[in-house]
Length: 471
Image (cartoon, rainbow, N blue to C red; front, side, top):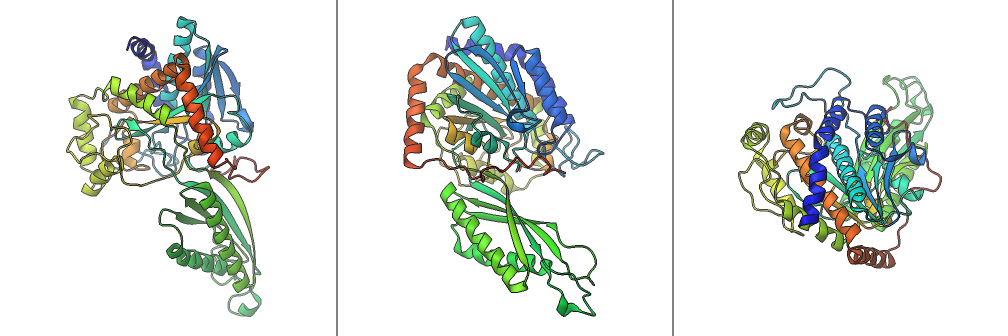
């Protein structure tokens, strides 16, 4: 208990500066790989706190790494700071009120994620210095989690090759361990090429790329009946061929997001989607090319680390929310549906209550409903023993990727939840540094899983990060 309290004091000491960092990043929302101001803020904070800083890691201008300590195990604490398009919103307002500007917003809480992870890393740095314990802590600033999959590229290129353990978190409605379930994903662009012609005078001379895209979409819709129930396929038009209906469209591009429960299933499903695209091209006498843009693997569990992180959460108890925090959370919940609120409880496997904010720690391995998204932390978990926390930072029932999430990104409750989870992460890092047996068990579990299913990167060799995807 004494060790936990010592590291928590380091977190509290630095908390105000990192709350301010989180708020500054919230004020300048930036999309995939365009997080220049946010990355600069994180880099400046790393330097101010005395980390040894490497910028532009793996050829990504908005990725950085800060290291402190000497020798011993290497603990990586992972942060993010990218925002989402279309989720602009005034802070602390429980009604939809977009801010002037380009329309981006931190609707997934990554302003908190990055600042909270860097707060934890800074506390571990100070603890290492005061304790004289061998070991290194690294903060990895990872851009473009929202589809750009920076961590997948970093894993493929060996950025984490000398890391012993990785720790991270994500904002959520409850204080919990992130159940190690996520969908593997590939983002693919399909470009069809046809032949333009006058749609009235000479339609027989044209070969419509837009027709090919529409036929591909129909084919994939029929595929949905014949793929695993936990797989997902989504699409969006990048180029529909133009705005003139009297011209047969000679080119069109559609972007597909293919998800499956594991990497082998993903690669199989993506190949089936490619075959449908080829069939659409055959039917329309067009040609098609496909290009992987990014990809993410499913999460790999690590029970020893999950137990250690959960123990830290239990020692902390729930975040110290007060009556004002709960009052604003109730205002947010008034904008939600009952289904939103019930679904949040079911996802975490906890009984439905009327509490507007988290007032407990979710039991380890609570059996929630399987409602999975995707994260590039998945690839890190294949490279190194990895654990994730959920930090309670917003009203229970708030949908992810919503204006309500953006509205809560600078609230006192969000700050308290960020500091709370930073303590849990920092405490877990200390546990690994002080307990060789914990580290050995985490590594043994990881090695056993890889022996059963070796890791294969879902990215093609030589594919560069899509640095212009937000443009």
